[in-house]
Image (cartoon, rainbow, N blue to C red; front, side, top):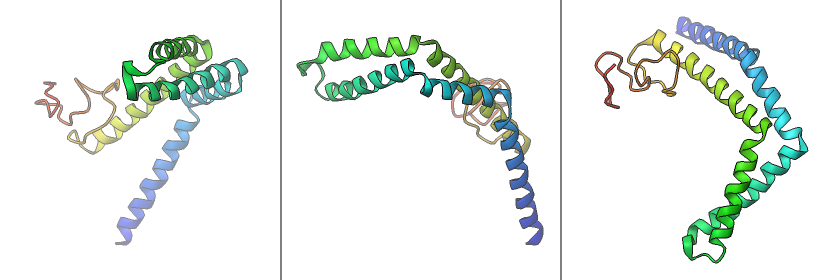
Length: 149
């Protein structure tokens, strides 16, 4: 009983240390910097707010579909606001940083899972270290996804 408790404490300490290493990584620092810039730049904040406001209207229009009196207008305005927001250099940089951080977390998850067993299912099929689909849980004969690794 004591040995199990000590193993759990040791594993928790190692997880904390790994989490801290990830937080101090270049990838995580870049993500935080891009996030701050995203919400401190007035121009970007206006674009995000405009898109969010239109998205709410868009969701109302979707309930009625083409029969809503402002269907075409709201659909067009929403697409334009999204395009304007997506084309902003700060939004694009944030999305890239977000994807890189997610990739890092997926890779770490895969490495941890594979150190336990090749049969452990891991979310994040886009991992660099994954084979074939990466999330089916079977690397030899394929799994529930139908891949044949």
